[in-house]
Image 1 (tube, rainbow, N blue to C red):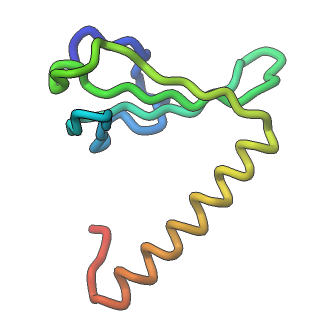
Image 2 (cartoon, rainbow, N blue to C red; image 1 turned 90 degrees about the vertical axis):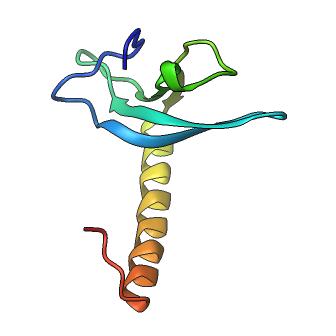
Length: 100
């Protein structure tokens, strides 16, 4: 992903996901980077960052989106992710699919 805005290294949470950008008059798919971090010194928030590969987008300029969460908000998000992950796993097992 050339011209990347987010730093991607061995510690990046996810460096290659399927992403999607939606607008009122467009819907585009691109590879994405998703990262979760907190400041190294005196952490006071959790940051969730997302960047789509701008070489695959026609309607958006290069950009990265960020959300800053409190510890409580991060835990709420984690719980929601866990709940939905369990639903997906149960549905895959019911139809004989697997994640591999």
